Amino acid sequence: MPLKDIVVIGASAGGVEALQRLCASLPAEFPAAVFVVQHLSPSTRSLLPQLLSRVGPLDAHSPVDGEAIEAGKIYVAAPDHHMLVRSGKVLMRRGPHENRTRPAVNALFRSAASAYGGRVIGVVLTGLLDDGTDGLIAIKAAGGISVVQDPDDAQWPSMPKNALARDHVDHTLPLDDLGALLGRLVREEAGVGIPLPYEYVVEDRMAAQEFSVIDSDIITPGQPSHISCPDCGGVLNEITIENELRFRCQVGHAFTPLGLAAAQSDELERALSVAARTHRDRIKLFTQMHDSAHARGLFHAEKRWLDASRESEEMVAVLERAMTSLRRQPIDDEA
Image (cartoon, rainbow, N blue to C red; front, side, top):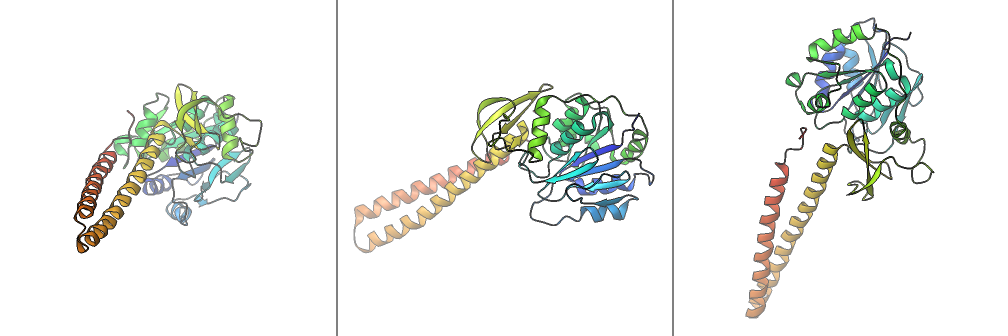
């Protein structure tokens, strides 16, 4: 029987420090391949592979597309690329964003579950929102093991808390104990792999850019909703598997409920900011027109421009209050 030799790890806010501590605690003789997704800015060079190599016994690097998988290596997702796995190799692809991120934890976890089933150990560390939760569910559905950092031990507890809320987690423990646990688990025989539902397989292929939904006969999983995609404006399909709801549009952009709420908040704030800036420009215009009318003795026009300026000032105040209220809405944690 094969061992549990595929370890996939996801982190977001606070993840760089957490990943360094975890990789430093892994044993030198580690009979498994480790795959790491840390949410990254798409426009910056990541130093995470060097940091992980420096603190621990295992070599870490960002793989190239099609690179062979080796035990005892740490593969780190590069900025603006999903890192996915297939039997014996790594894929680096610029598939559709998930929760407006690329790389995405769910994309890695889903691909590992599809390719390796019961050989997979999924680990969710510190971070915001709920990326990784659906991926852990896929790993469990395929016969793998799920591990979550104790939220009380996490710098940002939302990702661990949302994973735990789904009642599918096998192990929950502090960060400093994770290395020893993984060292034991990777020496255990793997469970029997279970084929994943069709929806997971289609979404995995979309992340890998193995087809375009728009140009193929493949139908986006789920049923059309009444919600539009914040990224492209298309209709989002509702997908429910293992009692979990998520959304994906025809282009392929994917969202968890918390991720969709956060994206909608971003769009609202952007629209409100544009409206407020436009009203401030109108105030400047109306002030100029008021001064011009005053200089020419056009008192009726002067009053009209003054009233228009005051209305725009009131609108700016309303929009600023709306933006303040929007920023205070608690969408990081599970409702």
